[in-house]
Amino acid sequence: MKTLLAILAAAALAGCGVEVATTAATGASIKKQEMQEGQKTMQRAQQKIDAAVGQMQQRAGQSADDSK
Image 1 (cartoon, rainbow, N blue to C red):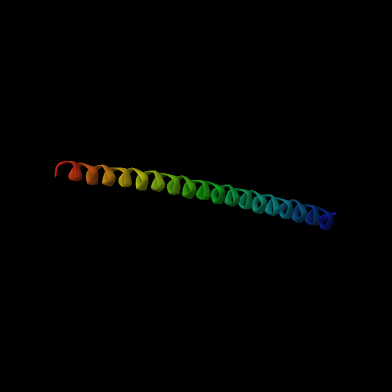
Image 2: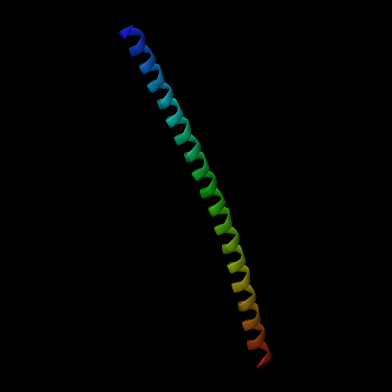
């Protein structure tokens, strides 16, 4: 009887370990996706900034040409 209880306890603990590992893996996967989305957002923002800077430089160049 004690052996049966020990086996059941070991099985229950092993099941908890698998659940914890699965939960950790899922959490890591979600964090990875969040990081990738953050990087994409940062790239889009950088592209918009670069475009705005380019437009400002063009306008500055046109203003300089107009004042001559």
